[in-house]
Length: 387
Image (cartoon, rainbow, N blue to C red; front, top):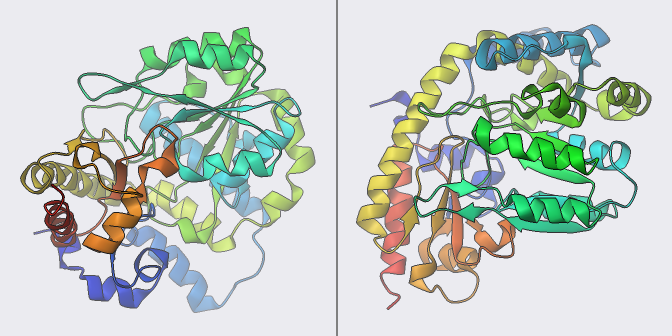
């Protein structure tokens, strides 16, 4: 038994937060946050500020140190050497996408989304006056996912300006290999496009897979990429509001210095301190937590086979998100709504992750094993009623 297994639903609901209070009559599994707290180093950094009552504005030096901490982490984990002086702080990875659309792409150009993907990516570009081109990933017989290179090439040829590359992928949990990423470099460069690389889940990669930062592939890739990341998923601190942009292009860095005043200013002070503590002092905790999550994904596989025999589940290579194919059940209407009403499980309907994914369902397995077991059992009991 791991200490995480002792956490109960009642404790989680009493602690508050969107995941457990939005649907108080259901098991919350619709949002990407974990139920196991954060690293002791992060807690200590926050507690130190609580004890002294110093809740003023974050300093330039502290944001710069967060850049150095990220650079140390990227070197340690991925052997990627970046200039810590070219790392900017901002509240969220989504803020980074907003800045990229507004300042690092051709005005009015469309945004390419390999789907399935993270739900807000379908609305945020539209809020900034951009059309979206969905290019579904191609599912292989093995259950693995591949890029539709011809579709991406055609989208750029038709005038799109930006490829949103989420790696590790949400919701599939795919870690795209170097040989899968390299063709994208040629396509993007040939069309004068840009890549916004969302690498927020990179700390959560399981044994057997290796994350390769897209901008590290080559100098060509570095020149057309803006990389976004955060400690928020790996160390479970999304509410503290600190993300980072890594700039590998001189012109982009010059633009950032002109436009970053307010995004940088609104970064959470405690988030900056927590980020430094996570990258520098939270590595052992992360390793233990990734091991726990790896065991959970195996448990989930066994539960799906037992309770959901008509479902398909491909073990994710990273993240704590599982992408379940429930199409064989022919669930009437909206899959997410039906499971919330009939199973008491509040997850993410697949259609929210792409137009071609009706009948799919995303769940979050960063929860105690007893809760994960109850979640899948509830789904199995409800779906057994469908003939």
